[in-house]
Every structure is written in C-alpha cells, then in structure tokens.
Length: 222
Image 1: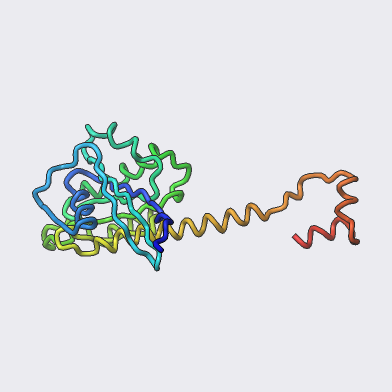
Image 2 (image 1 turned 135 degrees about the horizontal axis):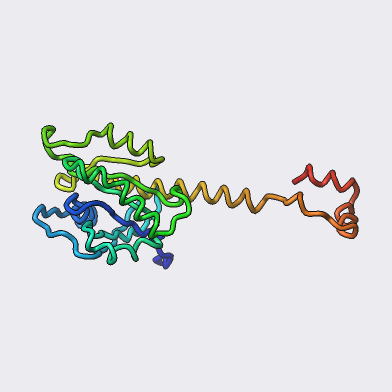
C-alpha cells in the first residue's frame, strides 16, 4: 500500500543579476536541459523537483526571479515564506559578484528576517565552464566573501555542462537541515528551562516539599 504522507516542501528562491544563469540552473536541475539562448525571466517563474537526501525525499519549489531592477515589485512579494535563498553570480561578471550584498540585503528586508542565520544562504558562482582568461572572480574571492558574511555554503557550478548543479541544491537542503536541527535543540533547551526568578508562595512551597527535602533541594534536580 502506497504511503499518503507528503514529502516536506521547501521553497527555494534563486536571486542574482540578470544574465547570470538563474533560469538555466533551475532548468538544468529540474529537467536536465540547457538553452544558452533562453530569454531573461520576466517577473517570477517556479518549478518543482523532488530531491533525496539521506533516504528522505524533499520537494523543492524553486522560484526563479527576474534580476532587472524594473521587476523588483514583482519578485519581492515571493521572498516571504522562503526556506532557502541561493545568491547567484557569474564568475565572468565581477559586477554580478559585487551585487550579492545588495541581493542579500533585499531578501533579508522583504523576507522580514530578524537575523541573517534564520534562513540558509548559499552562494553559487555559475558559468565555471568559461575559460580562465574570461574568469573575473576567483574561488578564493567567493570563499572570502562568504566568510566575511557568515555564509558557510558556497559552490561553483556550470548550468551549461551540468557541473555541480545537483550538488548545489543538495548542499542547500543539507544546510537547511543543519539549521532546523539546531533550532530544534534550542527549542528543547528553552522548554526545559525553569524560571527561578519567580517567587513561590508559601502554599506552593509546601506542595513542592511534599515527599521530603527542602524547597532549595528541588532546584538541583532540574
């Protein structure tokens, strides 16, 4: 009998300047197709793809957003409710790399993030298939920027050759899992904490002591 349990659904937003290959990355991952003559995204598009991580299947709802400034009002409403944000640049386009900070701030603002570590950011340097002469951003520059911005996941990909494309999405989900695990541990700690600052009335103190021992002895058992 087939299980009716639905796979966990994760909303993934791909951000970056126009022309860095966001649509190509999404299409390569979802359908294993590449069209270098594809047009720029107008507004927002999304596709779904199942991904297996350590025996668990996750359904990724991948949102490809237009990189041009004139489409900002169309893309920003889709930032809220995101589980993962992929900051994307082209390694042969230095300006697209410099604009990662702008994209990160825009997402944090419109997604209403209170802290940057609320959601996993992953940096993706696309077009790793270009010649060394065409490269404008080194892998070291990418890693340095990520370290300076407390981003622990980054990878170079090529939608054209399919290099590291699936690995990038797997890395993103694994990062999300680590954050979820950390949040669960913190929540458990909060729920188990006893507020010792609250004063206990005489009647409550008496009930606490039923079974023997002073009221102060109970604190050591928490």
